[in-house]
Image 1 (cartoon, rainbow, N blue to C red):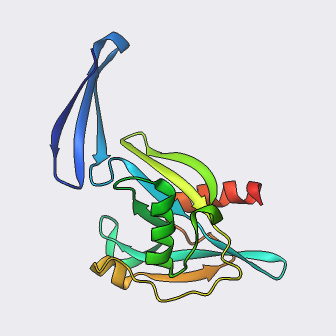
Image 2 (cartoon, rainbow, N blue to C red):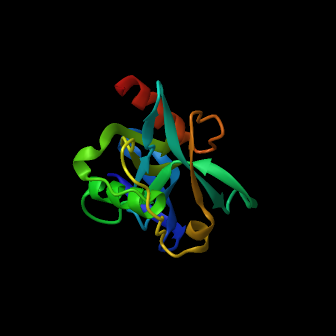
Image 3 (cartoon, rainbow, N blue to C red):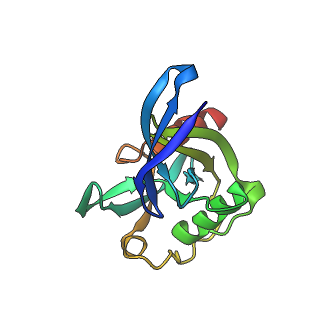
Length: 174
């Protein structure tokens, strides 16, 4: 019988261990994002510029890596409850300053974050070519206040692997 125990954690993250003797698993440890129930959205918006594309990227502080340097990432967010597309739309407005509809989203599949986390990322893109950008609201936290959005034809500055997954899948879709 499969048994999962929580080793330690808080409202954001927990460390868990699975034991499942019938399957030969006698202690596999992984992390779980509790606040989002292991569900995240990652969005790489684009716009057409002449005969090419630009991508909306985000410079943000990531405390586990460094508090002195901003890293380039996709728009991301937790799916705390309900509709995944609704959360993607909310994150685009909150972090990017663009208002889009669920039907505007381009679904690019799912990605599992790593072998040591059970987080599932739902990857999206959206064409923002003819849309007007408003001020990003953010969530009020220091990290959101200090983040900035920028357009770039290259994704080569990104530290976030979801940028590369989304870009690869989007280019196949386009």
